[in-house]
Length: 362
Image (cartoon, rainbow, N blue to C red; front, side, top):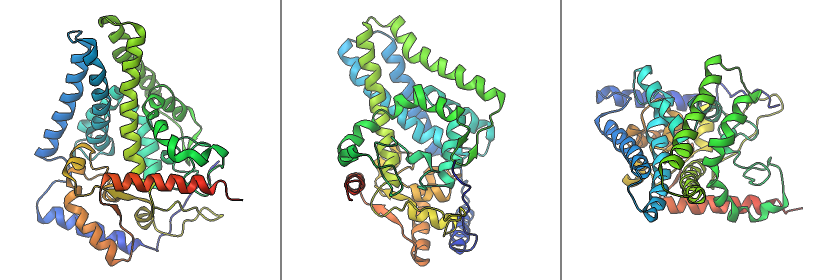
């Protein structure tokens, strides 16, 4: 059972106070809300319209079967984009200053197969607090025993090839989420060091909305589409492979690349550094100035800013990134950044290869 982790209350605390003050000043001087602006609401409409439009087009049964396959892939990608751009901000409370609005848009997470309540614990509480700490941050435990990304991880002979088979495994992430992960996490006694005591309503929500997803994406297509079960299965698998690979790559490129740390607490559970300094050493940006990445990835390519300011809508990350970077340099802290998606992908590949090779060192 993981011990309780405590961060230093002194080391690095001046950095966070300074960067937070400067970001507060930026919003105040420019009279900007920390939440969604007109551009962000436009993105929200675009991704939700794309997601619902593609789904309705598929189940309309008006298209030839050869068109359903690419549309299934596109629906999988849009499912991930809705998660990145809309639900992620909403569940963090960053989309709107109104809790009811955030809850409404966070609910959409159910329609892409994931439970927003479980996510709020595993991601908002556990991952954002214990980032990259083995045994505590369950977001980095992609396939325990198969994927090794830290010195403390279990060693397995097959890991020698993990830099090749990791990517196909990432493509299974969405299927795991829909059929396994949420149930496992919900009924664990603890998620990391977080005690799992759930309100009764969340038991109902878990099963009811999973059933709704299964009806909308399995039962209804089989009822209305003029296709065989195996043709449906191919389309369903393609949807989730596209969704899983999109999600898996984006999350991994933010924390499992060259330069990021996987620090461990001492025997009493004490971390060497303050929480904000820890975030700077365990998190990385990629394609930071790429407008395409910024639009589609919901700010997840600017993970440093997101981890320091999770309640700020991602639409503002580009503007505050210069402040964060300048302050990090001033305090002699790292600002991990891969300039392009491909350079981040290469860095992740090399990291996997490094830890896979190390598992064979006697």
